[in-house]
Length: 420
Image 1 (cartoon, rainbow, N blue to C red):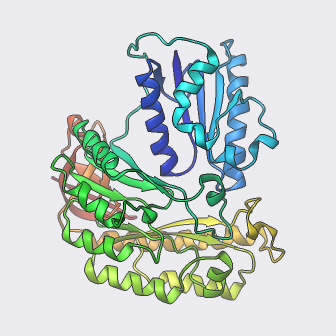
Image 2: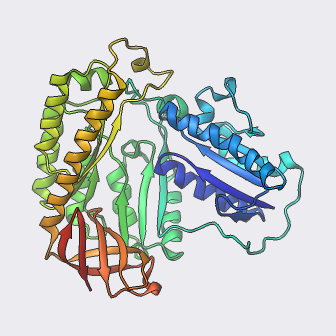
């Protein structure tokens, strides 16, 4: 039996899909690439915005239609993830054969096999294999109870739950031995990780102490949690990428209060100053929402000026999107969609300027790059520890998935170019 996965949304969803695919393989299924002919298609949906949810549901309907048009048997379509928890069962789920709730997701392979009433044969290598990543996603926790006013995730993921300490270390060791040069520590709200008195920084230090592990990258960390301890660990541990993604959402104090965020612009700026004091060339990323209800022209100007004054090298910019079921979606002081998008475009232009400026600072400084692809001309493409796009001359295809030393010679549009 063949199964494919189509994953929407965050790194946590991606990490979970990889674990679920491994469960299917262990049960004798052939995991094939998304879009290949399959007996079962698993849609791992996202509900962080209404648009993301609708994209997933549209894909469910499209899968059946495409099979009919190609004269192929219709696959059995399974829907899992946050989109199921966001009351999607009471809406249009045409094309979906099975909804699997959050509490049953870990048993997905077992549930699907039983539902279809099939005994899977011994596994053989499929003609179209599911592509493997060059880095591995290591899920350490799930859930969030911060309840920001625009976010549905606490309702779809539930309260924070941490994976057992030893289970995380065992998986980290196994992934490294399987050949993954970089492990990305991820979760719904990773700073909520707890194992007794031990927190996220303790866990990352323990992962770094494993001889098999070469490089560790952290996913997004909420401000006012454990970011200072993580920065101190970055400064002391060469295995940890010098990259910190610290979601801001807005640089305006009133907007942050309406969002239900847990910090002020001043506190956030102090954290950044501390981080850059420890690591002057820290790759600093953030998330920004434009046009949140009540954001006036003056508030946006304050937010833009605040962002411009900090040494970011990457901005993830999103026009505000109403998410039914959240307090913000009920507000009446909405900002016109055209204004939200115009403000987003302005911040995207600022992002390109700041990324280019940061890249220029790294020219002439040795770097390490995880090679993800190699062109026919021997130019490798990958990402530095600071999360900058790099082009490395003199790389062979056998080095894909490896970390190579790199000497940046020039920077163009935020991309580093150079040789070995």
